[in-house]
Length: 421
Ligand SMILES: [Zn+2]
Image 1 (tube, helix red, strand yellow):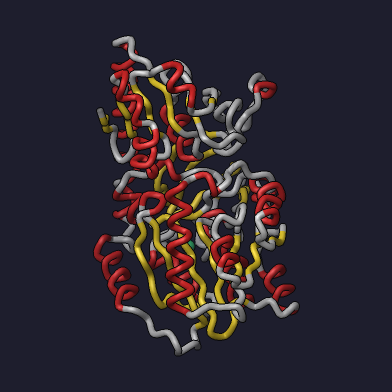
Image 2 (cartoon, rainbow, N blue to C red):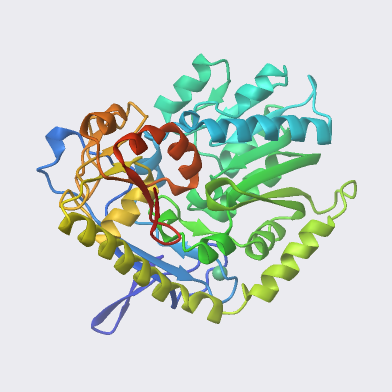
C-alpha cells in the first residue's frame, strides 16, 4: 500500500496484502471512522480525534477482501480494551472446542499447544485444566498479564516468522497452533502464515477461526468491518493463502460464532496422515456456486449497506418523534462502525451500557455516546434497547429480559432492523 506520483497528480493506489495486485474494485465504502476500540475518557472528548477511511476493496486476482492499513497494529493492539472472557457463550464455545480437539487428535501431557493472540487466556485455560502444556502469544501486555495470573504462560509479542524461528530454535514447535479471530488483524499476512509453517511440527495441526465472508455478505454484517480487521476471508481465498506457504486445509467447520465463522484445519502439504475431508471439498464447491470467484458477487453488497442505514435511521427518527427513549446495549467495535456510519449520536441514543468495567465511564469513539454499567437500564427504563453486539442477542435478551416489565422492547439492527417486544 503506497502513494504513487503520476506526473503532477498524486494518485492513491493500494495493493493486495496477499498477492500484490493493484486494488481497483470497491467492496463497500463506509466513509471516515475513528478506530473502533479507542474509547475516550471524559478528559479526551473535547480533543481532536483521528478519523480514517473505512473503504474496503476486493482483489480481482485472489478475491481477498481487505482494508488498507492506516494505523500500525502496534498502535492498536498494545493496550487492547477487548477482554475475551466477558461473554459466557464464547467461553462455552472455547470449552467445547478444547474437548473436541483434544479428543480428535489425542493431545496429552507430551503435547504442546500454542495460541496466537491468546488474549487473557480465555481459551488456553481449558488446556491448562487438562494439564496439556501451552504457550500463548499475545502482544497486548495488559491483557497478557491477566493470562499469566490465571496460570497461562504467555509471550508478550506479535507473531510472525521472527517469533516462530526463535520458538522453533528453542524446541517449542507445536502439535497444535490455534488462532481465533486473529487472521483478520494481521497486516503482514504472508509473514504470519509463513510463521505458522515454521512453528508447526511435521504432523501438527493448525486451527484458525475467522468470520466467514459468505455470512458477512449474506447477513449484511457490514458493521463487522473496522480498521482493526484488515482482511475478510472466504474458504477459497484462505486455501490459496495457506497453499502459497506449503500448508493444506484438510478440513473445515462452519460455526455460528461472530455471525457465522469458519474453523479451518491446516497441516503441512506433505503430511499424508490427514486426508482432505468431504466437508472441505463441499464448501469449496458451494463458494464457487455462490460466486466467490466472480467480481459480480462483490458489487451488490454496497447498495444493501446503504439500505440498512436508511432503515435504522427511519426507525430512530420515528421513535424519537414519538417521544420514546432509546438506549444501547453493549459497546463492541461493531457498534462503533454502525453508529459512526449511520451518524447516530446522543441525539438518537441516550447512552449505552457494557459489562466490561474497562469501558464503563468512557465514551464511544466518534459518536461520544457515554457508556455506563448495565444497571443504568433499570434506572432509566428506556422504551427501546438497541442491541449492538447482535451476535449475542439471545444471551442479552435473556439477561436483560426485565425491560419487558415496563414495556421495553429490544431492537436488533443487523441484518435488518427488527423489534422484539
Ligand atoms: Zn490478491
